[in-house]
Image 1 (cartoon, rainbow, N blue to C red):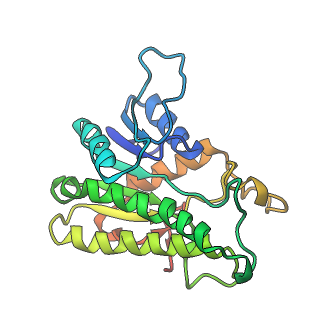
Image 2: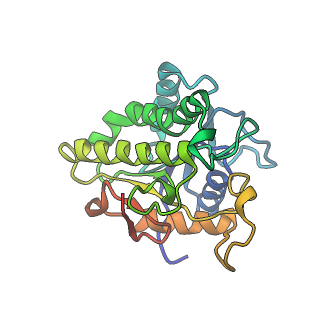
Length: 243
């Protein structure tokens, strides 16, 4: 591995396959790992497990702050936020505005924007005072307004665009107090997970990555991230994407 892994990492949305893969890569390098998830900790053969698992089942402002406070005891230098939903048992992405449902949109907005915002709010004091802290929030290229030439996927596109604005706004505010902080949104690329599974047919050869491959790429981005890039939407290869 030609880049340095974090000494201590916090992974929020820890039950996703990408989050799990990031944790495994870091565990192999003896990184201190804290993970926050709505789910219970996965079973592991290792005793003790190679991470500090914090279950935030309620995801209220109070419960999220409590989990963040416990995670910050390990002083993470790098923070990944991996929450997000494209589809679930209730609905697939909309192909037309006629399929847009206000209740579903509100649910997607809660998962894709409100939950990350709540965790970022809980992290606020830490971000403003911790030298060289890095925050990478998983977003999506389809959240780029400029790049949108296909349309469709209304709720996912809207919520990811809002997420990008959330992190852009916060990056400006944090930079006024802590000029060494780096906060970005990050497109992980098409990864072989349940999120992308219905849309993998006819993908160009080589575009679909395993979670392990994606984790390595995202950790490389985090290792090379600088305050100069704060507020940007980055591709999996660290190139800048348009908002």
